[in-house]
Structure formats: structure tokens, C-alpha cells
Image (cartoon, rainbow, N blue to C red; front, side, top):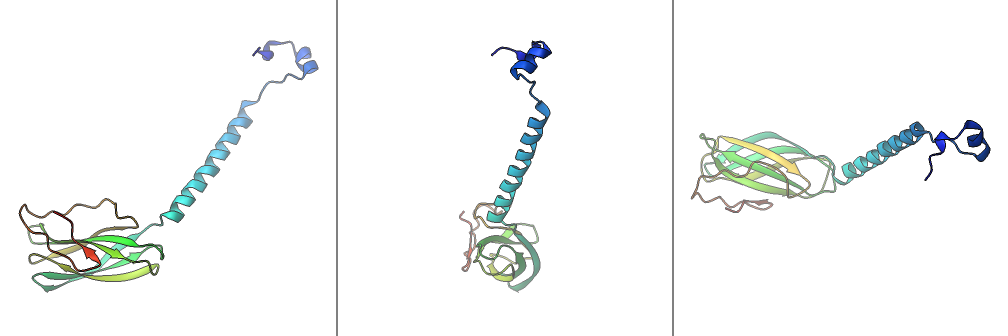
Length: 159
């Protein structure tokens, strides 16, 4: 394609050849990018609402059970998965479970009876998510130790 910008001004005017303005095109592209990015983020947040969990308390029931109570804030219709664990004085896991919380309300307090294979001195909620696949520290049981079975809706990790 010939370069029309080197033609004399009177020929450019006569034949309607104009220089293209780059700045308005770049501004249009920038605005379109911002709008489409915002829509994509809003759609993602609507389909994956944030989930927050905070440990409220834990109570030692016996040498083999601790009740873990936490609060859960989330989208009300979504099933949520929370990972809880208990540790002994050596910070070794003695109980670990993924607890399924069915959809219900925006805010819930959950108490789960975590089965342990030794005396727990610490219990914690490692995290909650709307997906079964999310990042939390894995179970840390010593080699050869049987991971205790959990009561529904909790599930112990497979060894």
C-alpha cells in the first residue's frame, strides 16, 4: 500500500487522504480493555464468591476427640469445604478432616467433633473454599501412624 503521507497537502485535500490519528484509537482500545476486564472480574467473583472462616473455639472432649467451632461467611447457595486439624504438644497432627458444609446461609457457626489418635492441645481451621481442590497444608502424621476415621460430614485424608 502506498504511503500517502508524503504527498503534497493540496493533493491530500483533493483526494481525501488524511493522516490517521493514533491517539483516539489507543484511548478506545484502553477503554475497551478496562470495561472487558471489569466485566470478567465481576463474573468471576459472582461465580466464585469469597469464603472466610475463623476459629472461634475448640474444646477437648476426650483424649480422642476435640470439638472445633468456627464461623463461616460465604455465598449462601454454595457447598463449602473446610479443612480442620488438631495437633499434639509436638505439633504433630493427631486429627485431620475435610468437612463438607452444605449451602444454607451467608453466615454459619459450625461445630465439628474431630476424632484424634492422641491428646490434642491445638485445633485450627486451615481454610475453607467452594472447591474441593484448594491449597492448605497437608496432613502431617508420623510414618506408620493410622489416620483416624472421621464422622460425616467430615472425611479423613487417605494415607
